[in-house]
Image (cartoon, rainbow, N blue to C red; front, side, top):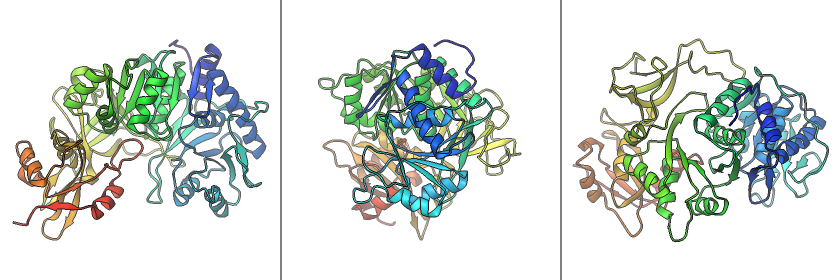
Length: 513
């Protein structure tokens, strides 16, 4: 990838299209677009936005799935100097209402969901709450007159604006919205253009690379990896929903070279991989995030997929650590942050010594965190809410969420530690652990397990296997066997859904002693 100035994300994408106009850029079930097609389609959508009154600095909420229209919509907003607000395309009316209210968005681009009887109920409800909201629906079907209709097949003259400035906001990442108080982290054009082009160079992305975009583009990691791939001149194969079969089919059909995902994505894919059926020999590189990669999974990725693996940890706040070092990856580390940029703190937020587990904090001098519409924070450190530790060599290890720790009679149990131990059991394909309220000890350890094929593990048997690696108070006291572990699109455990499923599933419980 050539070096050079990239003052804004739009300018960088435009430069890529000018260098490699005929290279494939986007592939989804409905469309195939070259880099030139991507920019041209974005220009046509920008014309639609202009007619609706979208101007520089306006916020455009994008609630669209992983399809070609998403990168086009993102690029169209940037071409006008508008701010792309990344919302999950399965977000509910209250969630989108909170995002619109938080960002003061003027426009929504929306992909109708599965509500066949009323596909436009969501934008209609939002317009009742926000009468001035302009809505563009991504559909080839008829739509109500008050909604603008658009797809990448639409013809028309491109009408982009003058583009943004490097200091202009480019993206608002919505990291939470289910509580009604979404966190709206803002990223700026110059900063993101430099960082994401630098990432593409560090990962040695090539114009011939084919990236499987199965992580939602609305998520910070998904958008970052997809945009880095495009800036390198590569192409994205877009999957709207992850399944191991769909991923394996796409890898073979399109010659995918770069694969991204969470540990669960890789574990499920490897479980389904059949060398006699699936072709994966085009793969050369993988990027893992959203959880710890245990050594046996790392070895399986290396041996069965024959790829290099980079481990990455970060958040939509713009913080992050990553490593390609094989020894660090095998140890379960996410990399070695620069000295002084990361520290581990206790409940009093004082630094802990090497090896101690505490909350991971990032220096705001090294990782400036900004929230949309808010003044820059005055605190010197950003407290992530994640548990981790630094070893003597400066390697960072992530060990779950602070809020998810189980308090069993005053003893703290890390669900991730129990999950990792369960995943080493031969009867277990996937696992998740949470604390079940208990009147005696406060919380008990509940393990939810997806059994390996042909296996049916029992609670006593699993406790016996785990007893060699976990202290007695960490051993599961309840076991629920599930057909699947519910996960978010990024691959993290969907804890509310897990609790709901465990509440109705048959369970084995340890008799109270």
